[in-house]
Image 1: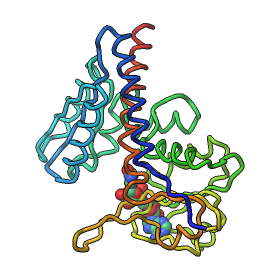
Image 2 (image 1 turned 120 degrees about the vertical axis):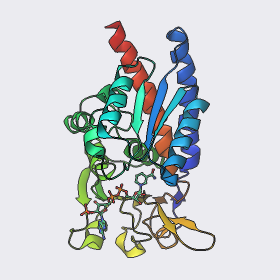
Image 3 (image 1 turned 30 degrees about the vertical axis):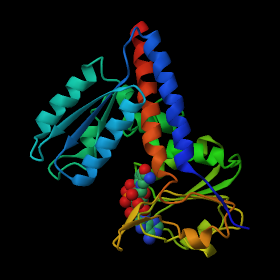
Image 4 (image 1 turned 180 degrees about the vertical axis):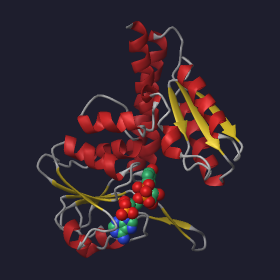
Length: 291
Ligand SMILES: NC(=O)c1ccc[n+]([C@@H]2O[C@H](COP(=O)([O-])OP(=O)(O)OC[C@H]3O[C@@H](n4cnc5c(N)ncnc54)[C@H](OP(=O)(O)O)[C@@H]3O)[C@@H](O)[C@H]2O)c1
């Protein structure tokens, strides 16, 4: 039987409507102060500029106040530190996003770590990662949160389930594994040195691929009836150029019980959860200000 196609675009749209409604409520309760999302873009990478513009537009659409800080590629570490510290101290800024990757002379991990953890809407600072690992309240990385919502929409029963995550990046794989563990799944994290990857994947009730290799996961890697989430976004130089996931969708859809497409699966969830995190950060700041 063909798998259910998990419609990330529709689910993300619902999250955005909820956030817009909650932003209005927040603004009324705060005497007109709206949540603010500040983005920092260093250099002129066209892909990064498109991502940042999309995040700015989306935050405006839900009633937040976007502000963007475009900086030249030769910006010094000191200049960037000064800007981050200024935004950390600005009460009009609820969330700060430092668009990665940075030019080579700047250390993305170090500089991201300077963002106030209570404004860390990407959930990537060491403090945010530590809070997640310890099960403490905090801002979680956007894409893994989006995947949890997609799993919920697909009716995944995570308690006691075998979950396999392919990929161990700080951005996705590690926080994804932590969230699944928090939901009481039995979690295996795979990477480029994993032996018998296909064999490990075949154990999964929930299989999540975040590798960056087009159509790597084949039908015979998937247990019949598994839920398959494809995080990969690989540009294929066909004419016209297309986007492919890490999962061979055409094959795997006949084996899985539910599967995300690319595009239209995980991708739209990331911005939706960035907005949700910005609202959460604004709420945390307001609660802190009230003491
Ligand atoms: N939809 C979204 O919003 C969204 C968000 C984030 C990422 N993505 C996409 O997800 C993919 C992964 O992103 P990322 O940032 O996590 O990438 P990354 O930092 O490059 O990490 C890739 C991971 O895949 C592992 N890997 C590479 N080749 C492998 C192989 N042959 N077998 C098993 N594992 C292998 C790597 O292992 P090692 O650690 O051993 O090198 C690494 O852990 C990319 O396509 C990216 O565009 C999409």
